[in-house]
Length: 275
Figure (cartoon, rainbow, N blue to C red):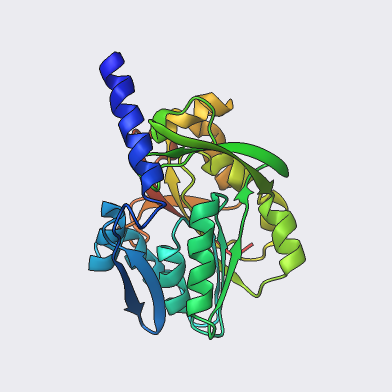
């Protein structure tokens, strides 16, 4: 136990040291994707190096390319550094819109930088988490993985914890009612187990949508009992709006039984018919 605590303290120290470039040399590079520029720090985290090499979330990006067209609107929930927001902006073009939700302050700053670097594109950074209830919540950030930040109480995905931050929470249906975007084509959710409360917070929007948007979500089955839900609840809720779940690489074939999902898994939900 003492050894684990010492290792955790070391990781926490290194994580905080990264905020001071004088002591932790960093190399900032820019990656261009069809006109959209994103700034990456390739020494900071292996995930960013994967982004720079084009290896990050390739199945998700292939799915996005299949669903998005110029002029579409994308909602990116759990945008983190903004890499998939940048990909989305490159696909919907200057006539489209990307709303990027990220509650963790240091990652939200990266989203702001993304928007500054691409003034011709409509990238809207939103410093908030999405959920079922508006207000505030606590998010735990991970020392090791910059993407493993969770609002699920007791969920071990963010261990060891770098920081605990109180963040604002909005319902997506309320936000979208006010923003009034044109044709939301795709919603991407990567919230480390908090995906179902986010989807429940879209209820008003989905009730009014003639054509429900495609939803790409990372599903964390082990988080559901910690939130008082089950995968059956998720399947019932999405089925209410005509959604079927598929693997990201299934291209509309072979539906996935959501209730049988084991382990963290990326799924794409597509409405079977227009309502």
